[in-house]
Length: 211
Image (tube, rainbow, N blue to C red; front, side):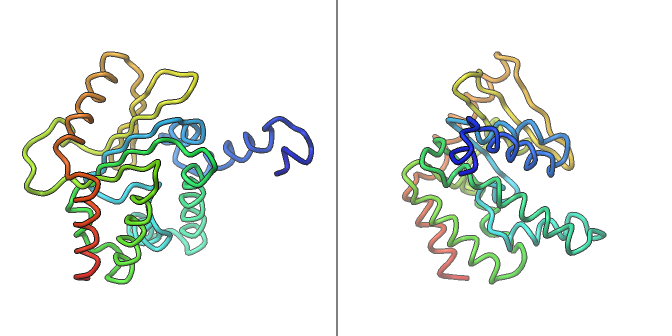
């Protein structure tokens, strides 16, 4: 809105994105900077609900447990930053978003029953969006090529796709074309092995009803 009022050709938008990125750990800043420019985001999460889909309560529970010495204000600031990331999915032209979540993530009691009910409900809402494909990898699935940890594929209009992998307080951007192709292929196999969009929604709904 400020860019429209002052005819600044996206200056305020770019400043906002830079400020938002600075509030995240150094290892993840480039990924955060790329998200608003992405035309396609694909994500695999075997451990927690991806940040782009987390509710504030779910994020707060994770952040509080991850840094028990943090003050309430520090946790609140981190939660606000995480929620701000989700604006990329709410605009008039959101990226194509594909996400595969392990069934164990849906069953893990993060923050207590109320928090999980809210989170499961939010996943159903996200999964119903036309630009989002949300799938669940069932615990019964066999071995696959992405068992080492979470991964995201980010594609922008003016750059080749890159891979972001993440560990405990660490993260890496992978740009090597051959490695990107290999991991992207592994993601394609992952989506083929996961439950369908409708079957995934059915599983989430049944877990919500049983909670």
